Amino acid sequence: MDITTSHDTDSSENTSHLVQNYTKYYGQLMQLRDQLADHVSKLNYDLSQTHTFSAEYWVDSENYSLNRELEFEILVKEDYQLRAVEEAIQRIKLGTYGICVD
Image 1: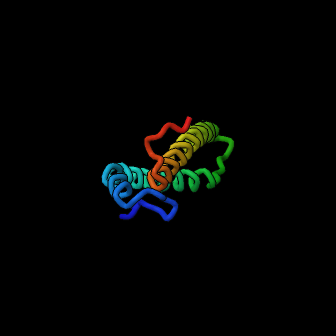
Image 2 (image 1 turned 120 degrees about the vertical axis):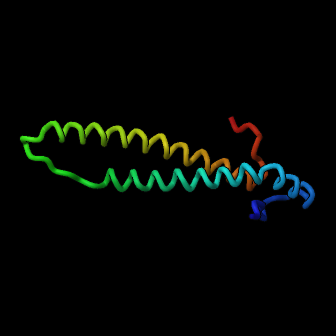
Image 3 (image 1 turned 60 degrees about the vertical axis):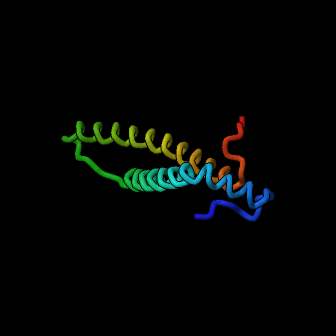
């Protein structure tokens, strides 16, 4: 697994040191990214589906609406987490991981 890019200007010794230090985190971040991306995709699909309820089942309709709102809130939070993970992966590739960005 090569996490260096042509943008890196460090010597090969520094690059090796970077890979040794962050390979574990890189792998964990990649795994987390895949899990989040899969879940975000499933939530997007679920939220794109429409259901109709007859008037006599208004309680089911209300429960469904509440569940959709909760799924949407989860989607927003997980999408934010996914972007943060992708940014961390990019920082590892650029050699800036561990440096404060704020």
